[in-house]
Image 1 (tube, rainbow, N blue to C red):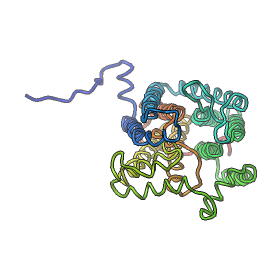
Image 2: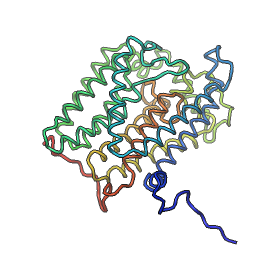
Image 3: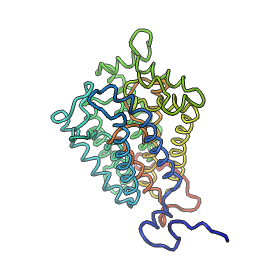
Image 4: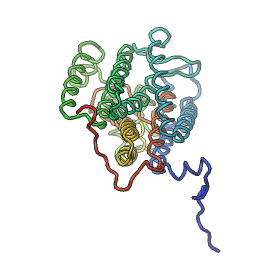
Length: 392
């Protein structure tokens, strides 16, 4: 007796779920789900050590149970967002951006200050970090404005996009949050370039960016301190990054084993910013390469799909969103490997944190929605070609 495989949905099924299943990129979806599953698994490895910093928590798996809830919320957000049409993506992105700006403007008055930064709003058992939602909102909005400017119908899309970017960055610097500022700036400029800006403009923008970084160095003492610790590790306290580096080295090729990590007990913020070092110690280089490979797969496959889209907005927005995920992952991993100064940035889909998980679910959901196979979305032989109409 033979059995044949039967998919969950047939090709002839016209229900919403069936249309979504056959049009969404299932490879990208599976990669994101795998990263979420790894995040939950690593939370069980890190939670018992993380609660040592808070004696009021009795359950050793307190952060693990919360991580399951956060992952469920992030997964739901991703799936719902992936059902949206491009117009729906624009609408939700604009709401997310404007809502984030309003909340960030109120942070100096109602926000909780942690380690000298007012980035969160306390909502009882949970905290909200609005800047996490501003990132995908700004990228989609900027891509929309740049696409409108390309049409040549008098819409000042470039000016509007830069005005919202400047407002967002200004609110981030008030908190202050230098890491998110640099991430948003880099991704925003990449979207600007992909929309068709000439290289001469990019040279001017790059020069302005370098001048801005130098200004930040003199404006913010904690930025100078972090850079000094990075450049002169022998002359200052580098306990945090030293313990993370030791954990990564101790893991070797296959790791110490599940629950056998030792250095995680001495790594501050191990379940958030330094979860990569926890995984490297317990599961070794093998898991580290798998994680890096999954992020690389998402970025490369996502960019390839985005480059073949025919609509300028969809192309630029999708590429920007995939780049946002990849850049944030690169920054977090580079910090763990002591390649750049510490930034206080989470590892997408893996680090503990409700705002980060839901916002990353929204980011990935937007990207999946924009790259779905719809009539006319892709044309045979279509390739990425930067458009250079609105800036000459």
